[in-house]
Picture 1 (cartoon, each protein chain N blue to C red):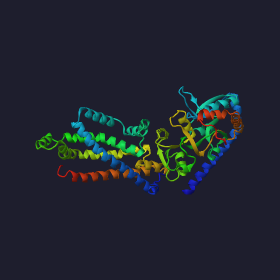
Picture 2: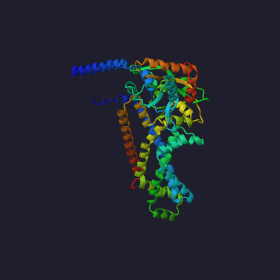
Picture 3: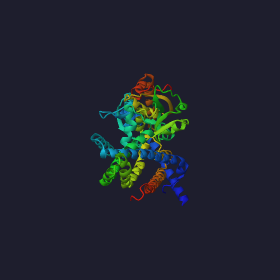
Picture 4: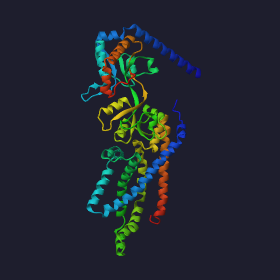
Length: 266
Length: 221
């Protein structure tokens, strides 16, 4: 019984491996994606539609944000029209590998993903930080003692904050970001731990208590992703990113959408 | 290949669960003490009070009984700070539970008072007893005896509904369960365990109140 199960697994592995090899070969054989884009005059860019401030539906039902402006720059650089394709966290990698999109925005690096995705340089900061009003003196994890800190329960923010918080820090765990934000804005929690995306969304609403970054807990910048092996497109995108860093337009985007300048080491 | 049950997450976190159960019981105890006392006053006022007092109590009862508890809680915790009243999560929970329980209990106690035959009061007046003495010594004990089971049910409902305070990060039993679940991903085991704990607490409370009731209202029913 056991050996048979093993047999099936090995067979499955062999098929999967053959499939991989086949895909790679097909990829090599077909024309380069960058050439396809130039020929069709369209670059299909996978983008979230509900990920403010990177990309979300605005009042006039157009997707807008940091990522859409990046998409415009990319389209300019490759001399094609940008076609924004709505994706979700679950379907975006298959969309990329199956060629439904030419590239993805807002993808964090992981070794797992690197097996099927070729990553560009980072183009947007993404990090989790402790935020609080400017008058509150908090510089590091040690200062959290005796403070009330709102987090979204079970998220990375929760586990990271729990890891670094000293004895005597009061971590309040809410069900969703709404609870975290409400607790902070009503003064029920002195500090909150959120990603810079949530932080910027709050700042964009001009709250009475303005949250300021106190210190960062975890950073995982956003990259662009292309199909594994599409190095020419990746190099092209890297030049776009490098250009935007150099002429300061990337920093302008960060100030406009993320309400914070790019981190110094970015 | 089915789901493999693993209750070690519960055993490892037994201390937390007990803490949560303690918070739930503590909240219920304070809310019950305040709520019953206030509802006796409220019921008396709605029976014999001035016109404006009766209207105010009716408005209060209708307002609370026709809005969700979670909305009342959020209003107190997240809303009142805008008016300058900032209560801690625990204070807000006790207040919300008391306000909620009082509204329901006013109606229950009022029904109990109305069920006491008018002759009891008239006879007491004829004997020259004072109205305050009559209320506390003659009418109220009979009124409470009439509606005691309904009051106990309402207290238990309040305890069970207090699970909602986990939403404002009070570490009650439900909050503790959510916490354990988010760390261990053992949803079935966690919620199964707190279901048992809630059930046990509710049954014990009812048993306790029943025994106490038999002593308090001896020979009355």
